[in-house]
Amino acid sequence: MSQTWLQEVIDLLQDRAQIILHGPPGTGKTYVAQAIARHVAEREAIRLVQFHPSYSYEDFFDGFRPVESTEGSSQGFAKTWGPLRVLAKDARDYPERPHLLSVDEVNRANLAKVFGELYFLLEYRDQSVRLQYSPTEAFTLPQNLFLIGTMNTAD
Image (cartoon, rainbow, N blue to C red; front, side):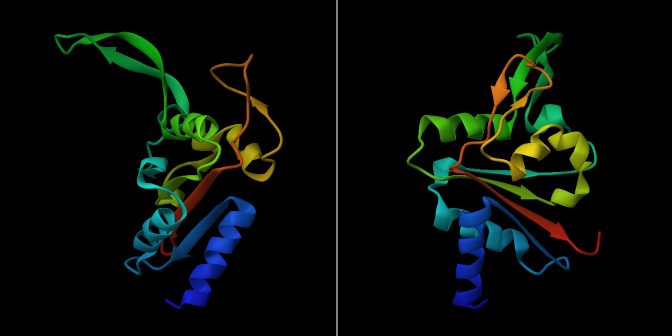
């Protein structure tokens, strides 16, 4: 990979706040995404998730998840934050640092099901949306939160 191409990708990420690397399987997309993430953000400000067909909004952002008792049986449900919501909070708490979410195999999930109303925020970072599980709360994506997706063109 040329340094010029990598710099163009980093510049595009800085400008758009999200990019998708795509290509045939086994060509190093995930490796490059992780290297760019480490270049842009500190390790504690990077999260990696891998999408799959059963991945949902409740997994990715927030929703009601089973809570186990100390004996290991299901005790009930609790609203639990997913990796995007946790990273967004961290980005708000530390606005001087970039935070990066790497989404591997982004095309393997039902994106409308996973992103829900958050799709809007990918394009309109200065806007807010009302949340599915917290409709009274206005949510925005922080300006210092970046996303890198990878996808195979063969899928």
